[in-house]
Length: 329
Image 1 (spheres, rainbow, N blue to C red):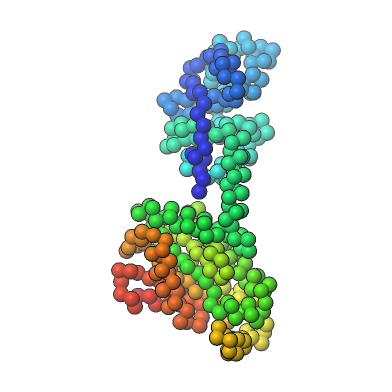
Image 2: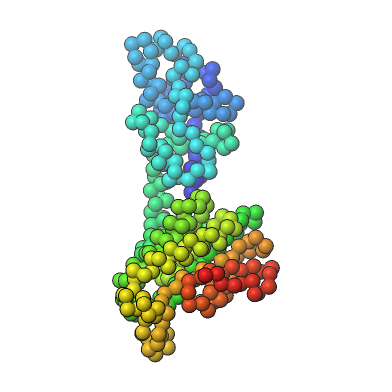
């Protein structure tokens, strides 16, 4: 995630006792400068934008009233201030939500309330556009979810922080190929979108901002939760999936609980309805060092879930016995 702290710029900083005449001199010496931060012991307390500064002192009595006095009479005492860890998108939304008068003011960036720098609106919008273009390049076009490149970035982010709790969910659809063969790719695409929406709703909308859902491709998805409370979420996903899946079958197949079509060996057979499998892995009792390590284990755990005809999730613990991996329907 690109944060506002990644694009900070440095501008002159003055104290609250600085006279307006001194600020005027700074603007004259640096003609391209748009604004100055006012700080007290490195804590930002105000902002002086050039346009608004000259607007005030150019009034009928403004020059005589302000020029020989301290800058606190002229400065904006409530500029937009954000922590350096906030995302570009969030800060852009806050900046664009300001009044027209302050729309193009600097955004003041802090770290633990201490001044870290500023970001101009021009650079903020340029960076936001870059981020959006990059995300579009690496987003799955069918589901709109992050694709493999962004999935790897997010997984590495969690793996690098050894103290950070996570639950990794590998989600896929059983018998999806046979469904496509029977109902067609258009209906299959709609089912993929349905699952993408289902995961987003039950993970991204009800969890904190560190939660993540990605689309590997086809009928394979991943999710990362910043905690170990995956069971309730898996149960909610499966319960809602069982309600939604009915609309994707005609009444005859739904009542039979199977479709009669060719299996993977090319022979006609009774194929169970599409079920949702979720393999879950946490770092609660084991530190993982690579994406490959997690992926291999997830593939093995997923096989256990596929032994069931119904939707289920399987939890895994490397430090426990293999029989800990029991399906939960």
